[in-house]
Amino acid sequence: MWKPDRNSKKALYEQIADHLEQRISYGEFPPGSYLPSERKLAEQFEVNRSTVISAFAELRSLGIIESRTGSGTQVSTSKWGATPKHTPNWSRFAEGGSFLPNLPFLRRIREALAQNPSLIDFASPELSADLAPTDEIATLMSRNAYTSYMGYDNPQGSTLLREALVEFLNNYRSIRTTESSILITSGSQQSLYLITQCLLSPGDAVAIEDPSYCYSLPMFQSAGLRLFRLPVDNHGIEPEDIRALYKKHRIKMVFLNPSYQNPTGTVLSEERRNRLLEIISELGLPVVEDDPYSLTSYEGPPPLPLKSMDTMGSILYIGSFSKIAASGLRIGWMVAPRSIVERLADARQQMDFGLSIIPQLVAGQFLQSSYLDPHLERLRIQLQFKRDLLIEALEKELSGLVEYAAPEGGLHFWCKLIPNIPDAKLLEECIKKGIIFVPGSVYGSDSGYVRFTFARTKPEEIKLGIARFAKAIRELSE
Image: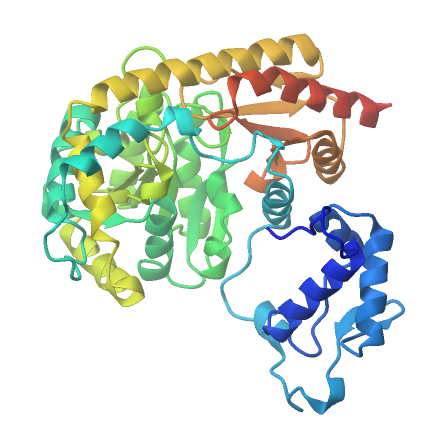
């Protein structure tokens, strides 16, 4: 991200004015559009607000921008007559469309991380570089020239990767399937997007967990779906709640993350899993099982997925490479009945003609390599180590101020705050103190919950981050 050069002989305000003029000339800010506020630009460029005010004054003197009290700063629509007389109203276009933007808190988190990469990051839901099998993947890529034809591949995804997944899912998740029943996607979110867009219709009622990662995805509202909640306790959802929602609202589909659920880290108990399968079988109700975390089980074998117990073909199972290896490869998968795979593969082909072939080949080779087991074991050990550091820090810094149940797997730590502090105030105060997290309300919970994601955070940052969080809590509670 551009920043003014403090070693330059040109004044900071002049550099900023030149930079903004260039962005305006490129059409990034068309005539009639509004520039970001002085405060936001000052934060972005890491300068005093007075410097931005001087830059705006320079641009105003050139007729490039116009400022109106109470209305903000607008790009001039008639600079020397050089701009078109009629410019599209891009602001209206940006606010239109049926696909909704991310939630405000998520946009704020993304903005804060972009402006200050040194923030201690308890928000990003991905593995740190040291937890990814970087060296192993580099070795696999160096061994293979990838000289085969690089044309469009099968819309279902690489045959090699789907064959590797058949073996992987059988050996690691006790799911028996064939390559023809697997669709390769760019990750769990694309799988969910295809399901909501292609298998459901506006006005359909669906059930999601409460709290739920699904609640943070505007794609459900963009698809016009009606969301009904299934409360999550320490043993997951209560299956009978599904029957009640079906009777009352005729829900058409259920979305679940039963193993180390995001954000709570809970695991649906075995007794409830069995009861759940009985109920959906009685109702003929499909379930989407999102299972990105189960192989991160810290101790003992991971919980078996619902799909491994599914004898009626009621479960659409989705998984991802992102939470167990490398999010940058953008590899996910879905196991579904053949008719569903064909329908979604057709839709995906209309979107992008399929994924890049090389990441699929790399992922397939990694799943079949001798690197997989040692990597998963190392991943579990390191994640448990980070979780334990987080617990130690919470007990030291926030004893009596938070409640939690320590997860036995996954990347997330869910906490309830005892002090009553509004989410927005807490988030902003923490950003000022150099730490960022996701407020619980993003996932549908009431204000007063937080999700700490510790997989990307460096071990040496965890104690410092929680100390800063505790300081913010105490200052805002006074």
